[in-house]
Image (cartoon, rainbow, N blue to C red; front, side, top):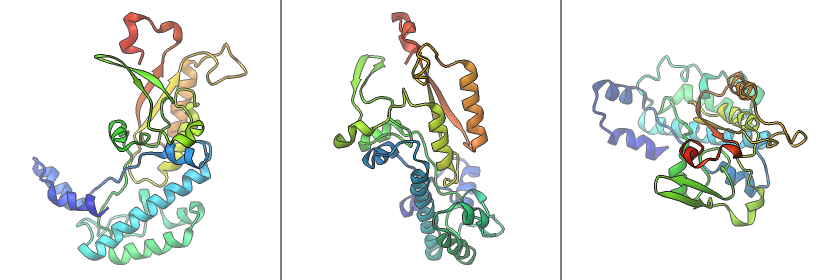
Length: 265
């Protein structure tokens, strides 16, 4: 939090409107990566929503608290007065009553609301989860809050085919779920749970496998239909997911022709 707040003062946007917005709102975005590693290490899955919720409640709380502590030291962001933060609302402009119903540790949120009303908060927006596929490879963990595509796969690049072995925790290898076979609705449920504790939209990526029997083990001849994909997208909206950043398809095996490899990734 402190590092990102410092970055605001070190950055000089090329446009006056950007500079004005930066100074007035001091928006930052603390990201997350490695959720799949965290789950595998604890032998959990993307269906373990209470555990996922508790994790991101902690992340949301400590980031918000840190911004409040920075406000004590450096002052609140200039547009704080009259904002929803100043009214005692918290992440995503939610009233305190929401946290009384949904938070596992209610008292700390109630106190944080009072502290923010008294001392202000340093940043208007605090958390943002990006896809960060490339940066997660540098960090040596899984990308964003998504499962890894596969435990091992070949990636088709412009210069040829490259074998990819994600940097999994070795002793937890068997507990990693694979995005290529994990039902997309489970990803939607997990991201919707996380979104409650994040104050900007999560860049959700959905992957649909078009091969037969992948999501329907009792119906080996059945594959996804357009209606199934549509229902998943509507479900994401209904559950409160803020954005679907990418929709990716795993093409049917019969489609993997040499002339079509560039569009069948």
